[in-house]
Image 1 (cartoon, helix red, strand yellow):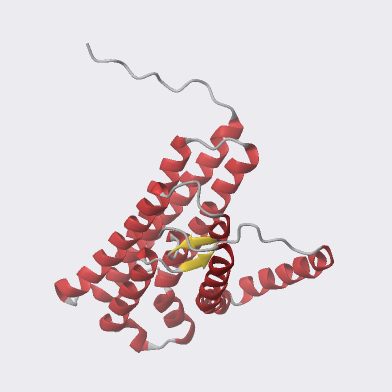
Image 2: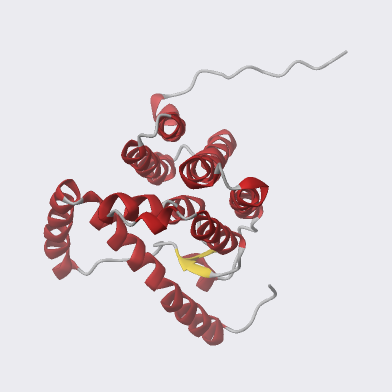
Length: 252
């Protein structure tokens, strides 16, 4: 006799809220794909950016409310796979690659598979990592990969550079970002980052300024953040190797 699975028992709204945020991100990403089919590329970027905001909030909200669960973790991983792995690749394919044959389509597939592999590795990572590793991701995380891989569309719409739509260039971006996602490159994750008391008010003022600029020049801010993030890669590698040397080698 087949054993029946127990249905969900009643849950609190605090348990439901992080999952609602995750679903909001998934819906945003899929809506971006719809806009791509309609050639509304500015809306595509906006939807993926909104999905990244939801993704940044759901896990933090779950930890804040102490409502983390296996269901929420699985939903978040599946949402990231779709929104940051599949949707950006399909958008770039529709934007620049659909008339360039199987090889160009293969680069879109490569990117998607790399992001999915990166998520699978993240989900299977051992929880008892050395302390110095806690401040780093392994490889480019999925939301950041989706953020970076859409740069050709952003720069094209800001500066009108037609050569950015070249299939070879777009394919190269897909390959590089996909390889970065599945690599062992240590990248900062922001955990443990603390702000000195005297810097709180200036930081809030800077955030207000950036928010205003984001409304006025969204694509320039997008490009600036992307360049700063890319510039952080060698810094994160240097800090990681320095901490690893201090704390001693450990098995890979």
